[in-house]
Image 1 (cartoon, rainbow, N blue to C red):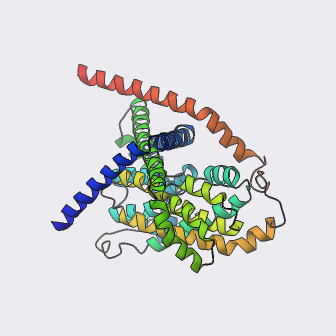
Image 2 (cartoon, rainbow, N blue to C red):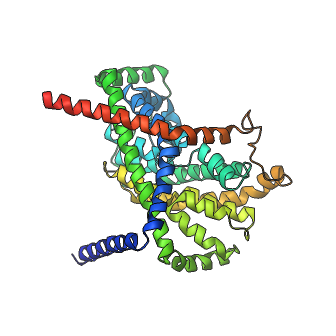
Length: 407
């Protein structure tokens, strides 16, 4: 009872301080809000919407169940999750935050995952997509696309490591469950695909409408969190809270012989990865390797903004948030360690004598400026895609309300 009262007082006091801060720093709050809005409707919404819609349709048509049967012999021994986890993992890497959480929650609602399996899966399927790592961070902030090779390698290797560790999570709770091993069978996969499609008897039009509605509702929620945490981060800076906690971070950085000036970018990155990465790239006193290590931690930890988005998605199910949060801390440390270990044998060995450039390594893409051009196209066309999708959402929503009234 006492803890509940303390929590009530703490929450009420926090919201009151935030409201007072908004009044005290109106211009700064508006600027931060606009920055978050621009990020959402230029990049986040148009880049995630197609993945969300296609994922919902793949689940409805049984393709995910098909993939699950095929991937079962691979995902079960390595990560102790069903084969459908392979689909979630691939889509999470391709589309970025918080697609892994969205798809995991969806599959849990479909009862294709147990609670423990879902908590394992969501812990290592949320990650930054290659477009953000190479385009926004490496090219946009560091003006050095080759740095993206190290950041991407350490990021995804860290995710795999977290997945291998989380396979031991929940073994005591799972003892009573029976997880039978199924061999690779294309025939069984097709059988499950057909059965799932038949059981989901929605017409294609209804299925597509549901996919659009669900995807846009999730993206609206994500947009709200991005704007909110952009403002919170700015207010914390002006209230000197960032500087206060940076003092403790400075001590930790000094132990590993990193410049103490990296403390403020690091703390900002704990709230919002884009701002943290950008601020880290501007610290001239640090070496590129030190900047890469800090950036790797920020990208892997995901920031409280992304974690709040994931918490909101998981709240719709019985999936607990605590394992995800612990996994993000582990991912942050693993990604930083991998960056440090791979710096000499990969970056220094292959790119050490080259000048920073916006060109992507030819060994990765046929067009050297492919990632940068894709990011520019997305920024130019993103707002139009967002507006068109929101108009479609309004039309579908209005039609459904009218239909329910007539019925």
